Length: 348
Image 1 (cartoon, rainbow, N blue to C red):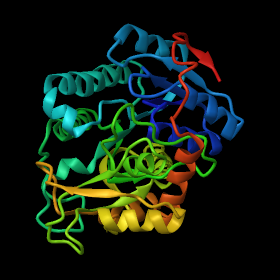
Image 2 (image 1 turned 120 degrees about the horizontal axis):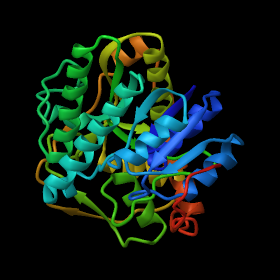
Image 3 (image 1 turned 180 degrees about the horizontal axis):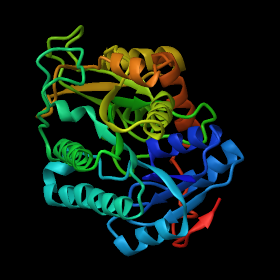
Image 4 (image 1 turned 180 degrees about the vertical axis):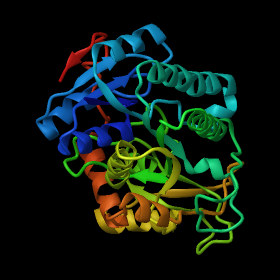
């Protein structure tokens, strides 16, 4: 029996692949490579020394996805595939609703057809919208403020309804906070296709000279230094959270949501200072106006994940900065594209 991982070639997916393989799981990866690179798969094989199957498939392609269920004995699904830019979702809402929600519908229908009723779903802290206070626990009101967040919230509700219709399902909803960092080897990391939407790749690309300066969006928030505060979590800790959630769904039934964060908030300028101290690299920055929809402070209460999953983030902000820079310094242009045109399915 194997674990099917959708979106496995991406930033979080690739690190989750490493943890799954190192833990001894048989792995099948599905990714359409629309926002990822095939070379991440090659490097996962280098890091782990383990074989796994890869399919270049869009989960919206029902026929192609069904063939994967026919060809393989699948025990559970970790579902990461989806579009993920908040700003882009505001500009292209229909594209986001169709891709994220319809893709998940297709996947769930096939899971039901082939009696695969165990799922770990990649959700997001954006489902909370603007919190009234912090830290945020799982029982906070859910009120996503943009199309991306609403797709995550709608899928959460869909999966809850699925369980209520059939109590054989076992589902973990993982609400990510702000993953940064990279694998300590520097072989896999975050490789945004254009100007980064997230803070850390913006910092590392400025450090490596790809960008002239970092834009800091607002310095008049009611925080320690006026810049926005977020819960930054090392991507390897986040990946290990998927393993703990997988262990949970393999041995239980039901549907539960879990925050995956550190429980500690850092401001933008605190992250910049930590990066400069850890790497010895100066980051020029410019204060610009706030972005619409940004909140002053957002960080998790991870108590439920600790109690029910036995998971706790272990890496600190220095680890996150060091590993993010280790990836960017070794890969100033990100992954190479030399394998990007391969369209077939194969074993790495």
